[in-house]
Image (cartoon, rainbow, N blue to C red; front, top):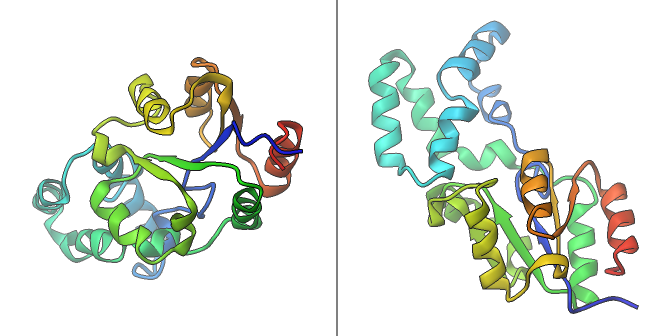
Length: 203
């Protein structure tokens, strides 16, 4: 017997889709040491995270190109070809999403994602149509693990505390959810998630 009073909240990157900046740039930079340098110094996860927090691409890209003019084409590719950083589904997770939908479980996403990049990413992945709402950090200009984005999720889902089951690959994001009373789990793989959902009475 499933519990439809509970909602399940999914992270996106590294939970629904394998996300790595390397997935794109290994296609564009042949030399491994040059690729490592580029990802450590130019298009880094820390720099990318500005967009997750709401900084527009029109501000980020020119500033980075001014700092690394020799890398201008690659920096432009970050925005133009961002979907290629997360082209592959995480094995087995989408099947769980559709099973939850069939069981009548309300589904939400809470993701650190820039709003411009998410708009283009969302448009090519039908999985997002099954979610009742998607809380995107770039749109809110607040990113996990800031408590305010969890409060926004509670308001928009109409649920709080133990009525929210959350899965995320980042321990800090999971701990922030637990501090609000959510049933939150660190994502490792689909099998572990399935066991957690079963234990919670959701499958």
